[in-house]
Amino acid sequence: MCNLYTARRTAAEIATLFDAQDPGIAFTGDKELYPKSEAPVVVNAGCARSLALMRWGFPPPPSGRAPVTNVRNLASPFWRGALAKAERRCLVPVTQFCEWEGEKGAKVKRWFRVPSLPMFAFAGLWRPTPEGPAFAFLTCDPNPLVAAVHPKAMPVILHPEDHARWLAAEDDGGRALAVPFPSQLMAID
Image 1 (cartoon, helix red, strand yellow):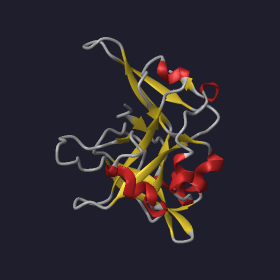
Image 2: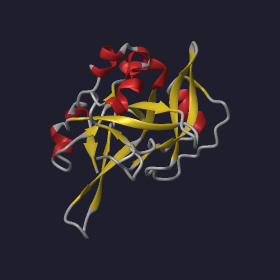
Image 3: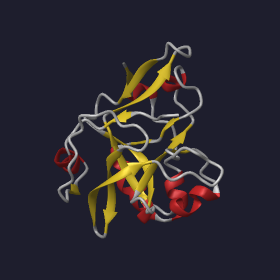
């Protein structure tokens, strides 16, 4: 489960890369992002895209303790409402994401990136919460590169030509994008 990533660009650079309006968000991209971090996401704002700063992780369901950061079961009632509404979808800008490898007590970070893109996007969902807007991102079966480190899942990485479709698609159209990104387009450090 991906619980660490980076977005190593300023808010203005992210807005430019994703053709979004920047409402003056204070984000420098200099920190690693963990659950509960505030991070930029791209949302549809009427007829245009806009950058927004949101907290990573939905409040847990009644039986949970930790924020829900990854959307795994797309059929779950917990996600159904957000998935059905295009206005609750977002792009999560990323420069690389981490999975931990090794034995307990000796784990090391393994960073995954898309070398051809200065920044790529996870397929995300957001919702208002009492503490402010929060987001999580979709996961899917891992591709062979990620599976060698984390065999359970990987984030849904969108091809740039699918950004608009993710933000606007009806429920079934959006679910069709929840597939593993091709290994041959990725690298691991």
